[in-house]
Length: 134
Image 1 (spheres, helix red, strand yellow):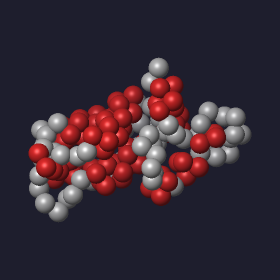
Image 2 (cartoon, one colour):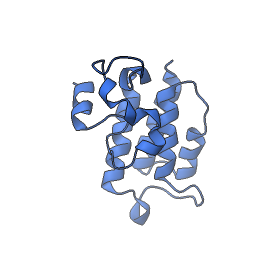
Image 3 (spheres, one colour):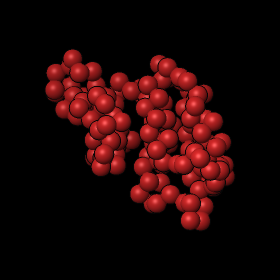
């Protein structure tokens, strides 16, 4: 199920935080929303790791995220705006390995533990992003 309103709000607030228009606590208020949209839930859980919620600040000056972190977050904004279903990205593990995304299912089984150095999560790599948005 796609939660269109929340995807738009989450994408807007991530973008606004990155642009320094809102502070981390405003972003945190958006992140705390409950939804049945699996893609939103997974991205929301990951976004939480990109800011400090103990002290209020904007993403500017010495508190600004590194370019690599901003690139990851901006890819997630693009994914939220794409209105794609989670199942279109992370295929069902019961499908044969030749199925769409079947070969990369392990990246999605436990995304919070699999994220590691994959800067293209929830997709496998830059080629997967290119295929998705072409």
